[in-house]
Every structure is written in C-alpha cells, then in structure tokens.
Length: 419
Ligand SMILES: [Mn+2]
Image (cartoon, rainbow, N blue to C red):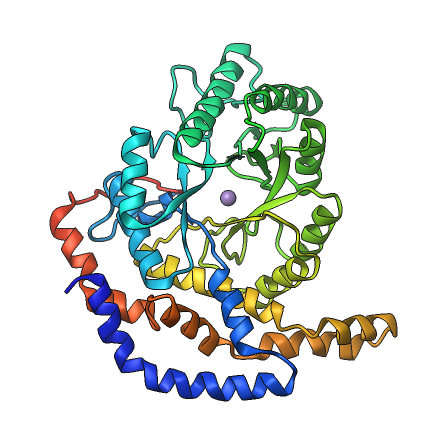
C-alpha cells in the first residue's frame, strides 16, 4: 500500500470517534461564541517549515547514536520531509542548510515537486570548516580579512542557490565569539561582523529578507558576537528594512521571558521568524512543546494578538533518541496546537481585565484558552486535508522506516554530532 492508502485505512478506523469529539467540542465552543469550522480553517492554513538537517539523528558533543534508515543526502531528506507533510498537512516547506544540502537546483526543485514541498529560508554554515580558510577563530567577524571574505561569499552563494529554488530568505547564525576574557576586542569584533553583514545584505534581492539569529553562548563559551536579541535588533536596524530578527526558542538563558522579547521585536517591526524547539537547560533542541508547552502558547499569544505579517515559522531541533520523522510530526502538531489555543483567547475580555488591573481574571482568561483541548480541531484539519488523523500511528503502520532502511546506506555513529 502507498502512503495515501495507509492514511485512508487508518483514518477510516478513527473517523467516527473524531466526528463525535469534534461535534462535542463545536457545541462547547459555540457557547463561547467561537465557530469551530472557522477555527479549523485557520488551523489548516497554519504551516511550519521543517529543517532538512532535522531528518537525520542528532547527537551531543559526546556522541551520536544513528538511527535506522537515516537519509544519506538531501534527496533522501526531502523524501522524509514529504512523508511528514503528507501525514500532517502542516509542514509545506523545508529549510536547507548549505553546504550540507548543496545540489543542482534543478534536481532540488524536481524532488521538492515530487514530494509536495517548497523551500523556506536558506541557512548558511560558517560554524564549521567548509572552505580553504578556517573558521576556528571566527567567520564574518574574523580578524583576517580573507577569512571574512570567504564567509561573506559563502552567504552570497546561499542566496544564489536559494534564488534558484524559490526561497525568499537567508538565516545567518554565526558561532563567532571568544573563550577567554581579553581574547578578542568585543567592540572591534562586532564592527567587523556588521561590515561583513552589510556586504551580504548588498547581495540580497529586493523581495528577500535576511534573518539575524542570536544565541547566548556555544560554541564560544565566554562571549558571543550575536548573543542576544539586543545585538540582533541592532544588527537588523543597522542593515536596513530587509533585515529582521529570528528568535530561536532555545537560544536564551533559562527563565528568560521570551514572549516579551517577541513583543518588543514586533513593536520594533523587526520580528522575522522563529526556530521552534524546546529547552530545559540551554540550547537543548528538544521537541517543541514537550518541556514548556505553556511558554509556546504564550509566544503564540503575542503573535495572534499583534498578527505581524509574513513571519517565517521553522522548526530547529536535534532528535537524539527518537525517530526524527515522528519527532518532527509531533512538533509541528504541538506548534499548530499552540497557535489554535492562542487564537481561542477571548481578547476583548482579556483587554477589559488588563484595563481594570484584574490580574487574577486576566491570567485565568489566558489559561482558559490554554486548557481547551483542541485536538479534535487539529485532527479534523488533517482529515479534511487528506492527511492522517493520527500521523504517528499511520507512519508506523506504513513501514516507511524499515523500507528506507533496506535501501539507504548504514549511517555510522562516531564522535560528536550536534546539528
Ligand atoms: Mn536555530
């Protein structure tokens, strides 16, 4: 059976129960003045891009334990991304990492069309050595002009590849920083970074955006050039209107109020997009919504409230102990769930309680939306789109992983494997 037949067979088992649950929820929401059909259409229209690199098993700086049937190249990765979208109808685009995913653009486009996805933001890679000059001591902010030039040219190459495959954005994250106080002049290093980014910005087409992604630390452990949203905002403001900030949920110190950062960036007109994941201690790259689902909801609460145009939603995760396809499907659905729950917030009531300084009822209004089990809405959106009511069950029933494991070369483990 092909995937479509598997989905139909699995959905046939689940449909009757789903319709009962959906009708019951519809009745409940109608009492709150919410039209479940309209909400289901919004859920169906919501999409989040999957990272090509997330389809392989990740690792830590200690080791990587490969899974079965790992993708050997970008075309295998696109096959996996196609399966994720076919089963969830929530991941219409894929974000590429260059040079990991470098291939003939015509072949990339043909494969994407075959599996039913498009391409989201391009990601450059200057945090490992890929050229003749080493990035050991930095890339876009390196003290050596030739090394900076190599990093600039690499980013421009990412734009060129992206143009050929229909991407409209470049995400720049650099690992540049220092490990010792005094190792670098922090002011000069940032100036060199800005000058390099201006060179990349010049090569950006008019209908493109460049995303500055901040991260508090790692691989540099004392100072990082783009360590926080303040530096990211400074960068975006200095570059110009096509430059925006990208918020990776795992790139902050523990307990930082990320939803407030989101609010500030929206105020500045500089919020460009997200890398969704979850975190317990640092940049853990855990599955979205598995550690702090309320925080994910609160981020979406800001987004639904302000409704900024043209945001890029992407997942950026490392799946070390699960099947990456299953983790990416669950994550996409959790992100979609947070969006739907945030859409349920009674905004008029909330504004009233805020105006009256009724902290208890304001907080209760948010939690009433968060506590609503919107699962039938997500399932119905998938059923109507021809995707799976239960994507993980359908994926396991399909035997896809065993099939590709028989075709793809065995992946080796070895040393560290952060992705
Ligand atoms: Mn990221």
